[in-house]
Length: 284
Image 1 (cartoon, rainbow, N blue to C red):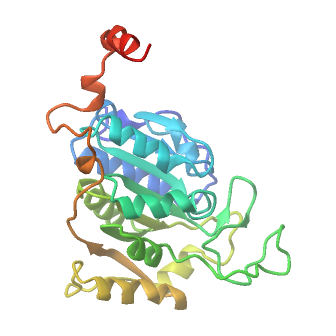
Image 2 (cartoon, rainbow, N blue to C red):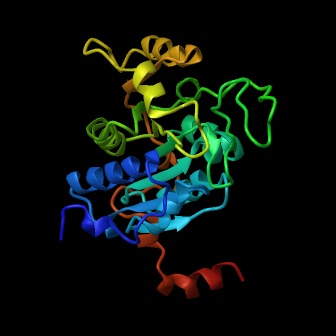
């Protein structure tokens, strides 16, 4: 068995050259290097090409409704705070249909890692523009170009309270692995936004496009400096893409502030099925 094989399920069906291949490998490598096991974590998938990883990644997982991956993950974390919870979703799923859940997951600082495949299109439904697409981007549903300005995920996460904000590029496997590992081990809400070329439906944001316009954060970048992180994130407004951990601070996480929190025992450990008779008597 190879080091990543324990996390492998069915063979992927993504298009040849799709950035999802690199992201999938990076996630498996990250989990392996962190010493995790398929039964030691929970994964929630959104809908889309990224969500198809539900069939390709072996772990405790569910394929959620469109835009509803984050609230499912929040429920899992509240039920079992001892288990790492990871969300894998697309930019449309996260910043479009699930935009409200994204904002509240950030502000609540839920101890969840969100890995977003950011490719500017709805690839599974053949290329309609997603919220991160640049103004004027054309597709079969917007042949004259979209009117709206794009959503900038890093800025959005920073201003809404996320305590870890990082970005990587699907064409750089070692960088993705490093960033994902940092996001998973961070205690608090972690966004890992991955710039992912869709080779079939997005002919603008290609590998060459991101190689030309992205850069790795310099060594003197201070991830604790909020203003510096904002300034870096705002560069995406001008199609310049910072790669690395823009922001990381420690703040109280949501589940530890709830009335039901018990450090030693999670809710699933405290409320077993054998307690059902007691609960029935209490509420009847």
